[in-house]
Length: 139
Image (cartoon, rainbow, N blue to C red; front, top):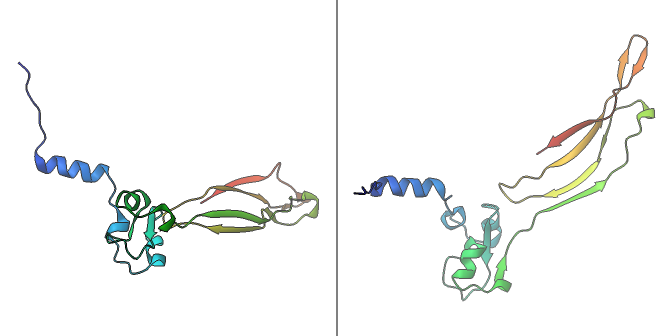
């Protein structure tokens, strides 16, 4: 005979809440599109003034509630290297590459990129240069 090992309703409720992240967009007390898209990386805003549901929500939930795709504002991330001159180890000075970045991230979002650093070192007999370049991963 099989026995049913059931979870109590309270335990099941806790497990579901732990597994599924809360919708921060829905819970945020926002009054504008700008405030909405700044809450979390998953937040979107429905600009349709006839839309009667909550206007700040995830894109998927806005679509499911009837907001038209063309009325949904989602902040897009961007990452652009604006200046990148290759490191010249013959210059005998500290250098890094890239030298300029333009980054726009949504709240809670990360972007990984490589930053090359060259740092000449001095020794009693003259300059000593590290072999290769130091690779850094910056968040």
